Image (tube, rainbow, N blue to C red; front, side):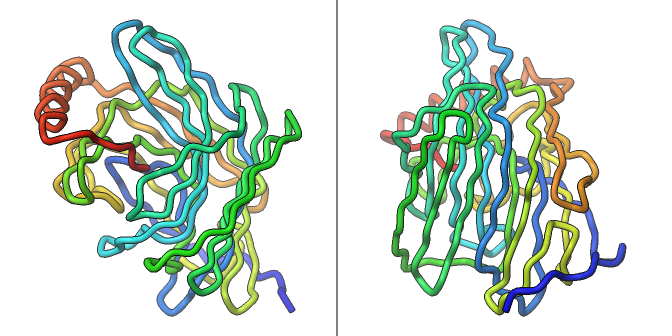
Length: 272
């Protein structure tokens, strides 16, 4: 029988920086996670014509460890295309495989609820648009599985030509994303919020030049930062807020040159 856990002591909380993730992760030696879920409001973006940019909000299992090569996740995309138009979509991804677009309409302001459930090599991903009352659910099987962590993340996606050759894409100015109803369950039946378990919780700030999570350690950075707020609502809610980097314009020009070199290697794919 599942049961709630007491709030974790302060010693089980820490912070980290990443070049591609902002949000929270939970993890603990010897703990395997079974399910992760949360809701969020699809944000809008401040777009500039001539400058494409990208962002994703998602929940997932695995991928937090520096040595991890697998991650099971589902979420939404919020991008600015080169014409300066906001593009909103949904997707799932079982790393190391590329992400797959979901035929589920999502627009800024929609309330989304997502979950990932893993048992053995069976993965169930689910995304509900609570505003339009549309639902996506899919059962998948993957040889590569990581259940050593659970995450609630706003990400700067990457363009990849292989698992080991990726380029961070420019981070869209998404304003702020509000996550809520964040819960997690372990393989042995324990449940809780981000702060409500006997696991370590890590607050992750997206910062250029920091450690990169899940994709190639040789990947380069996206300009701009994203900062998660302190937890609220008993550890089940928080916001992630965009902040432009001081050297964003210069970095954008350098990034465009690197993207051109990467594209010359062959057709790329998006990685979250």
